[in-house]
Length: 128
Image (cartoon, rainbow, N blue to C red; front, side):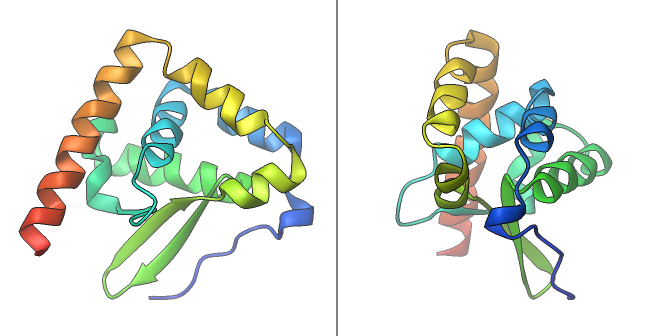
């Protein structure tokens, strides 16, 4: 699988980041990625099914990657998605934490993140 393009840290643009996070689904995806344990900072594409159809997820994950919010790493036939927390904190200190805290203050978003976390746990158990 061919590596996907990602903006370098210095190329991450605030307007593109904010635009990518203006969508409720993408905001929930970022909240989910931020909730992953430190020892497992990546999630397989299949872990995002709680957020919508495969076609919609492809679109949303591409928007986040192109804005520099996430990184997609190909592994075999899958892609592992991670939050570019360090890069975003370098460019815009404190912004990501504020956005995640606001996102997790909404009950509907918390519920969808919990469903995705449960799917992620089930995936990990199946892989073990």
